[in-house]
Structure formats: structure tokens, C-alpha cells
Image (cartoon, rainbow, N blue to C red; front, side):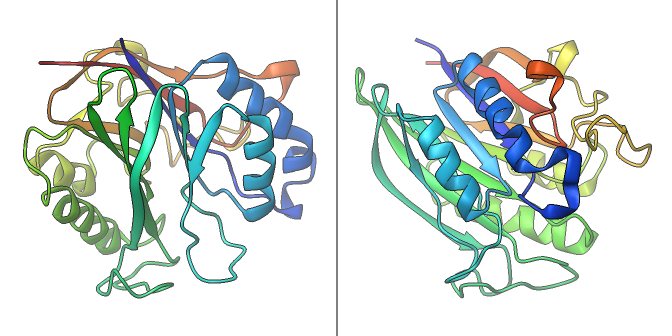
Length: 259
């Protein structure tokens, strides 16, 4: 049975958005997630009140999210998975810094604190394991993006090459950015590769329809390692009731076990 994985930068709740405030688009966001029937959702920029809303909107999902720092209102990289499909084996996270186990740490030219959250899931029907990582690389520092990607690679390399892993999130980097090449060199494969409608030339950051020219390509990614192969990939441009669910389009892939 295929595994449907969606990555969703939901845009953190903030009064500055006004006509695109979270209170006006949370139902659209949840509707898009539900309608696409994902088994696993990797979210970014989820503030505490948004996390409450999404948990209520997705009652059939279990979830894990380590906050960026104790007591913080910063957005987290929350993971959701269907409890009837998977059970949680374990989960944790680390900071994308020179001190990855120091809460709230940041390094290099990173403007913001950045974190990777991960879970190991067990498929109930087959007892097969799947590791899923949700992350959000820095949007300003190029050195930081590359070093942060390297940290994710080092963490993933602790598992055997044939251990199935999924990496998803807003990488703030298009296909030609060295941070993406850092992932590729470490063995990550673009789960959208070969699907023209989700290719790297299609933008995912649209700024609520403004389509800024400085981000014309896909910066939201889903990568895989180990015995997983893509059978479908698409950029989700749904706008329920004419409402954008976020300032990013979501990305959805369908995966099968490859062995």
C-alpha cells in the first residue's frame, strides 16, 4: 500500500498578515490537508495556537513536535501521521547549529533558530519502519543553509543505507542552491523527480498570490533514502473558497516500498 506524504509550510500566525491572518485561513488549511488524504504530514512554522487548531482539525492523526526553545511561541516543525496506519516507535529533534543538542541554539549566519524534528513510525499492517524528518532551513544565511543540511545528513547517516527515511520541509533553496546539492551528495533523492508538474521549476512560495520574482522555483522539498520510490508527486494549489491556506503551496508525494 502506498504512503502519501505532504509537506506544508503553514505560515506562522501573525497580526501582520491581516487579510491572510491564520484565523481566516485555518479552515482552508485543514481542508486541504484532509482532502488530499495524506498518511504523513510534515509541517513548518506551526505556532502553539496553530498546533492546537491543527490537532483539533485532524483528530485521526497522532502528532509530535519539539519546540524550538522552552516556552517559545516560535513556529515548530510538527509531524502528523494517521494512527490507524502507523504507530510511534520514538521521536526527537535537534537544533541546526554547532551545538545541536543545546535548546534554542543557532550558528553561522542563521537569522533564526532552526530545528529538525523526527519520528520513527511502524506500519501497523506490515511492522515495517519508516523514519520521517521535518525541517526548515534558514531563509537568510547561505552558509547556514549548507551547514544545516550537512547536520541533517550526519543525523540520517546514523542509520543503515537501506533504512527507509523521508526528509521534508521548506529548505529556502531551489534546485541549484548548494544546500540541495549537499543533500543529494549524501544520498537523498528528490521524491518529485520525474514528475513534470512538481518539478524544480514550479514555484511553491507564492506570498498569498503575489508570486515574488526572487523565489520563482520550488523551495519546498520531499526527499527519500532507502527502499522507497515515488509513484506520484504534485504541487497542491488548492484554494478552498478562494482562500490560500498559506503563503506556500503544499507538496504531496505518493511512495511505495521499493523492495
